[in-house]
Length: 264
Image 1 (cartoon, rainbow, N blue to C red):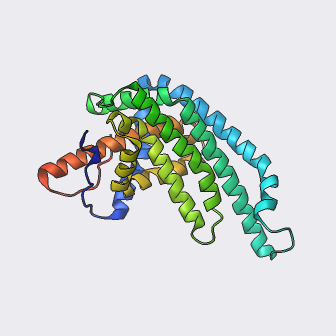
Image 2: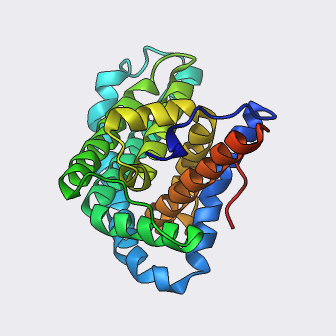
Image 3: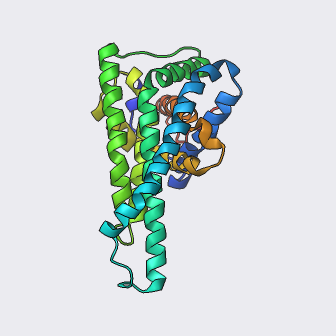
């Protein structure tokens, strides 16, 4: 196994670590846009992502009238100044969960293409694509488990949003973790990692991982950018793992600390 599992080095600051992780989202977009040969691998996953995210949003809009009576008091039992924000929160959380679920289904359907895209990104970024996987069965099993983790997170993200005070923040952080976990799955699976080892990797690089995931969730809301969101996040997740491997290797050689450099 590579240095991807090494304990991360100390950095100049937690905010800088999170920002360095977040930078890999636009870096993934830029990497794809500058390499037209990768576009054919991105077309079908992007189509699935747009179609199913839109379908998830439409389904959520139809479900809100059914969900609202179950989660909110009947009209007139709350002050008007409370009722409107609660209603807006319900609509936002429901539609967000629908979009999140649609993206998860798109990633599951296009997993083979996204894995190939990740291999090509790694090959172009470092000259070769490392592969320490025990075999195809291992990769398929780990990919399905990670995809299910992402899908199961959708209702959790939705329900956490209604916990008073801290709920929306916890919902956002859990969604970010799920995004980061799924988008780095292909490259970490090629390192031969199991689901448990991947979870440990994300705990060790917590701030870089959360920063990347939070930026990815913001990308869900960005017009036009979300068209290429799935492929771009897989490219960015691959670049993130490669940069953290280089950082870990450099730290082991020099004993210095730094935050991960942005990929070019």
